[in-house]
Image (cartoon, rainbow, N blue to C red; front, side):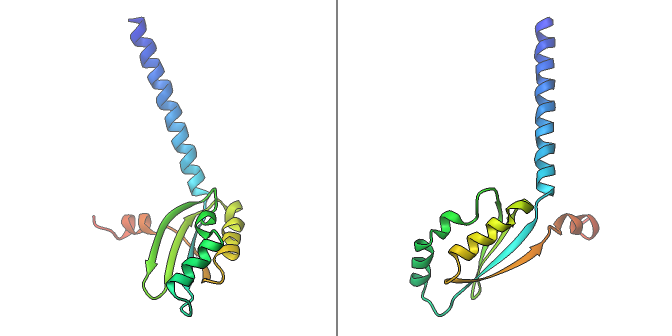
Length: 128
């Protein structure tokens, strides 16, 4: 009987710790910003030249920088790559530097502030 009580107590403590960790992670995600980065291909270069440049600058190793999360990454035909990141505000400069130092010369970059509208749409306008 005492053993069951201890096991139950341990399980409750473990579940409480897990819930606290999830709440902290969600709070951290809410403090993040969502920049969308357009990496427009330099159409005066061939794909081989673009790949050579990004290899030379180690773009793929430096972007996205540490401490950021890729939310989505699409290739838009005729445009280039469109990347949305989840970034703590203090890491935005690192994202900007990663693009400036490693993508320029192959891509023309544009940054847009974005936010997740899907939960609002679902709550207000989505299927009921």
